[in-house]
Image 1 (cartoon, rainbow, N blue to C red):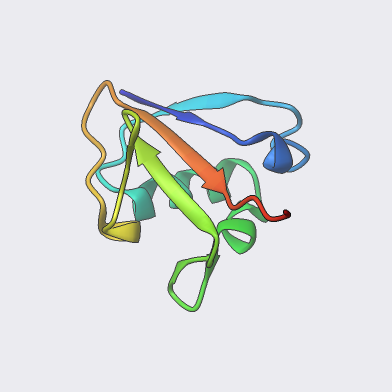
Image 2 (image 1 turned 60 degrees about the horizontal axis):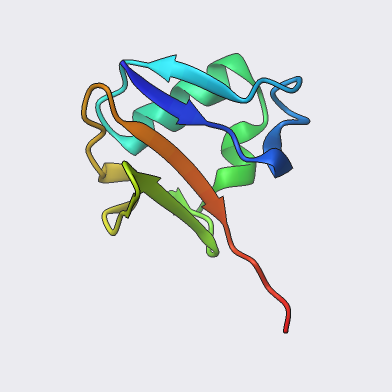
Amino acid sequence: MATVFIPTSLRSLSGGVRSIDTDAGNVREVIDQLEAQFPGMRDRLCENGGLKKGIAVAIDSRVCSHGLLEQVPPDSEVHFVPGVSGG
């Protein structure tokens, strides 16, 4: 099973849960499972049928370019990385 790490900025929705294990096959299924466990998570990660601008997904330390369709291999680590702004 893959481990999905929940960013600190979204832990208010997860009740402080830092990670979940999932058998999802792609990022869309990961978000579906997060939404089922923690309602509101999809709205914080997605808009217009894709990831929100400024949200990146890293799987096993590799920033992914296929968005919701990116495959999630078993035993991988999935991180949602919110954009950082400032100067």
